[in-house]
Image (cartoon, rainbow, N blue to C red; front, side, top):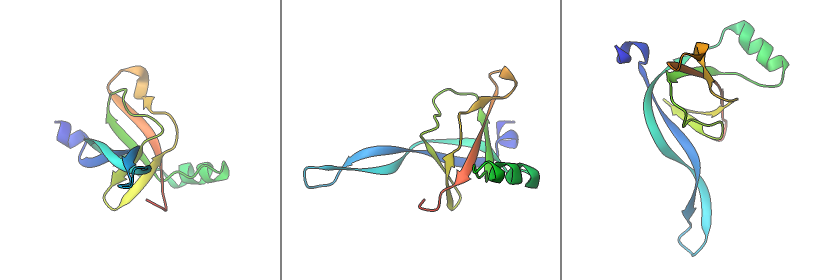
Length: 108
């Protein structure tokens, strides 16, 4: 049942401090969580309205309710990397399904 509702697999990435091998540190996007989700494409109207507000919208991400996903993470899906464009929303306040808007990152 869960597979039918959430047929896509994504990986959440978070900016992490790692050793640069010379005694210092650098930051890089590293994987922190892989889960089953549903990736949806916004309607043309939703994309247009978001563009008018200078807030591009490329995808909607739906996933089972959880509270550890934050707006400072990124999402890796197929060959693309997306920024989380806002705070995750509890759909209907039922603690079942979360939704968050995503925008494609050019520097992935």
